[in-house]
Length: 424
Ligand SMILES: Cc1cc2nc3c(=O)[nH]c(=O)nc-3n(C[C@H](O)[C@H](O)[C@H](O)COP(=O)(O)OP(=O)(O)OC[C@H]3O[C@@H](n4cnc5c(N)ncnc54)[C@H](O)[C@@H]3O)c2cc1C
Image (tube, rainbow, N blue to C red; front, side, top):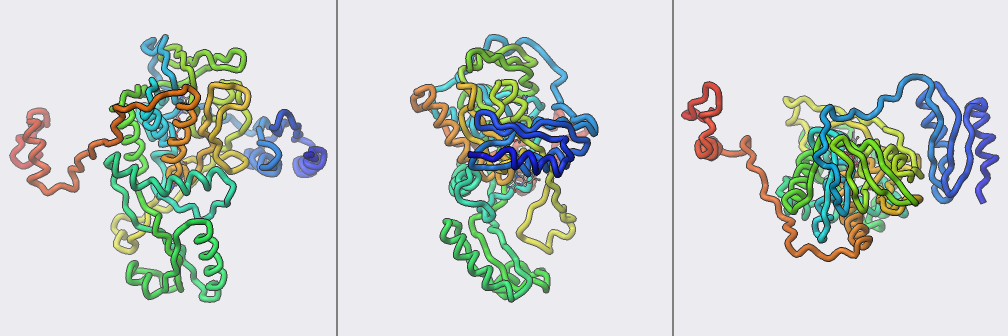
């Protein structure tokens, strides 16, 4: 039994009666008005009870305009009447990975992305770290998919021709007095299946010669690595398309028609589509898609993450790092949602995929594709080719090798001022 009156008293004390909670059908709905966005979010966080319900935050923010999603400026009718088995909404790493995994089955797959390219939101603006998930707890979906994603990540990168640097990750400690706690944690990570080892300052300094004097020892996680998140997302989309998926850029979902608990059609700026199943991988806009699909049982509050950039000239100081920033799509429960709809039958949500969602994406995709295949009773696609030819990295080639394809393609003819002789 959930004691909502106690929660309501707490909300009343904190927000002076401006916020009210109501429990309906396994969801806790928050209503009211607040002029401060941080307070809107903190009311949501304060109301979480992971075992009993999910939080849907309907508190109206009165302190300004919430910017709506940027929509494509183009429109046409070219997708009107399309009838794919599965329509994936969102061309981030999650949506593109799902589209590729769906192609393992005999299914018609379409992916729509509102931007002019894939990976232009969180999937292109993150650290690119393949994480071991050391801060995750058992029982979370986040933990399940991060563990599984981490295990298959290098295999996926090999198949897709995407470089993965197996750097490992160090958790550094400054005080020697922290050793007992660190050893206990080491035991915990080993028990939860995360490979980890103690590294003395001497050994660490051999790997990182410019180590700060303050570092006393570290714990090393060998399964961490660094990948280009944008390149991985593009590779997933590329391999999905090579296997027959239709990837539609500059295509935004603007409305969804639901009838008797089932999605009948999806309106885009390129016409109305009639999918049998919709997969919601819309990142920070996943709640908007759920609302259109009449299946809103969670709320997303975007979280900005910012990291330090190291000056390129100071690169020699550190061998084990990567930096970037972007916006995460967090639910109030701080966990992933990977499930069929609650009220609408033919939708699967891959929502609330915040960090370490890049690491988890390969495993989420495998599961979502399996759920979809079971939904359709789909057969295995014997023609699926998981291998994508790696792209040529001109910057990494010796000069003569770099010039050869340019000459072959006779690109000099198209290069203003280039005569091809000096590789221009
Ligand atoms: C600063 C930062 C650092 C991070 N570092 C790491 C890390 O080191 N390791 C790690 O594992 N994870 C990391 N993450 C998490 C990771 O980046 C995300 O979990 C992951 O990229 C989420 O992918 P996604 O596909 O769900 O979302 P997104 O990449 O946001 O993709 C969603 C897509 O849906 C599209 N879309 C939305 N609405 C519509 C619509 N109506 N119609 C059509 N398309 C629509 C959007 O345009 C967008 O392209 C980090 C995140 C941040 C913000």
